[in-house]
Image 1 (cartoon, rainbow, N blue to C red):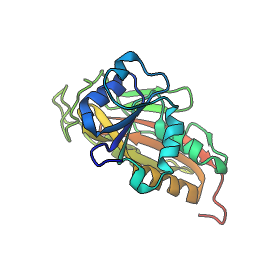
Image 2: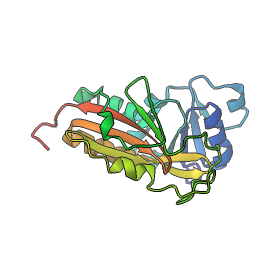
Image 3: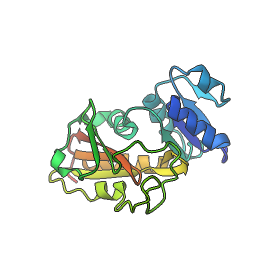
Image 4: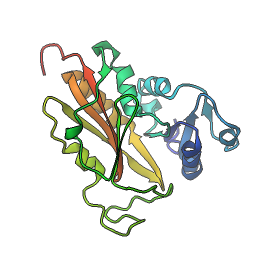
Length: 219
C-alpha cells in the first residue's frame, strides 16, 4: 500500500462519502457492500464486502501491506464488532456494562446490542467540525475533559476498560490507528474476562461490554 493512500474508509454512506471527499488521495479503498451511484462517482476504489469481515482480513496482513488508519463510517461499533469476530476462540459475547460506570454527559443513548452512545453536546454538531482542543466551535465555551479521557477514567469494578482514541484526519473525519487496534486485541486476549470497550474522540464516544473466556494460566 502506498504511503499516500494510507486510509481505509469502512462504510460508504453519506459520511463515508464525505470522508472520501475530504481525504482525497489518502484513501486507499472504501468498503461498502451496496455502493450507491454517489459513492461510485467519486472515483475511489470500492470493495463490495462487509466492513467487519474486510477489517479482520486486513489486519491479519503483514504490516507493510496494512494502511495506517481505518475510518469507521458505518452505524455500528466497528472496534467492538471486530474484536468479537477476531477473538472468536475466546467465546465472546456482548453484555451491557453497568450504566452507573459510564460518565455523565449531555446526551446518552442505548443501542440495540448493548452499546451506549455518549456525547458532550446536546445538539447536532456540524459535519465539518475541526475538533479544537479546548473550546466548542458551536457554543464558544470550554469543552472540559475530553470524552476519551472521561471513558478511560471509568471506575467499573469487575470490568477492564479499553478505550481507542479516534483522531481527526480531516474536518469531521476521525480515524483509528491500525496498530492500536491490534494492541487492544492483544491486551484483551491476554487477560480475558469482562471489558468495557470504547471508541471516542474529544466530544463523542461509543462504549460496549464484551465478555471473553478467562485467559488460561491467569492474568
